[in-house]
Length: 375
Image 1: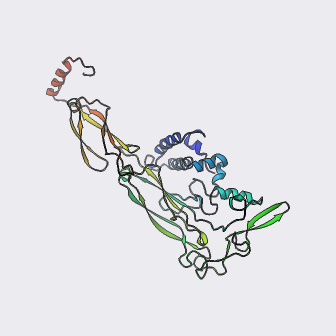
Image 2: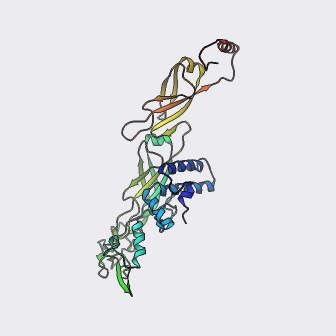
Image 3: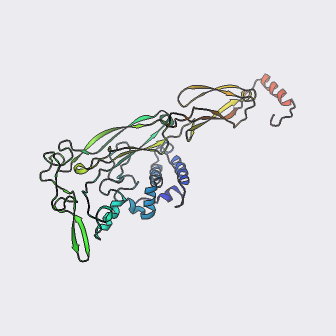
């Protein structure tokens, strides 16, 4: 059973998107595997937090959960890890996100209504061909902030169903599309009456497929799919945000007997950086500067996120805690431009002074000034 996503994130049911995102970022930082190496309980908490956020950040999934609870994701449509097995070899997880056996919320409701004779498209009429889509696949990758700056290609290796190359996905021995089932007319369902109610059940002749295969393909046994090791290269664009989800249409699992393939999704998590804090497309860093440079002005040199040396001018009288703005040295904004870099000034207090330095500071301290803040 899935855990209540609101309880996992510690937010109220009417929480705003901003409150949900804030709670998520706080918890994902707390339980991140990099901060809790070897801690299995923290790893499980990290997955729970990500699964809860996956539901609540999506308006449709959130609405479905609010209305139907865990039942909204029964059969693999939710955000819980492990549905349908784990095809990834790197600790990722596999979702059925609307394809496969249940095809989303509409199919959940349709299944519930069939027993009352309300089958059909939009729950009101005869069904069209019931060819099902392949399952969607989801992987997650944690990257460095520098990778998010430059962009990178992430390679995923996993095993999943692919179209059978011998029959071209049709499941037939001759590799040609199967004939429409004459019993159900291609709908995959037949109707019978039980007293007052009309009951819709899977067609006994084609097992709900809607097509009749007389002679099955020897390689896939009529399913149209085989399991195969796959390698997928996903291009992560420069400037991507933490929590972003990339979609590769048609790169999920192949569908049985020629249906539409599912999609492949990649969730992006960005590892906290030791030097730079990201705020939207801007970057913030702390830099300790000696007192004389702050007081008299001068220049300092910093290392930027893109591995460059940058000279920054310090104005005379710069205060500790000021934020110096360096335009265009933040993160790529996806429109060909960049955010800004902010340098928060600190101060370096020397631990050892020469006698000459002590004397100079004592003389400086003894000079009276009308300006407040001078020692």
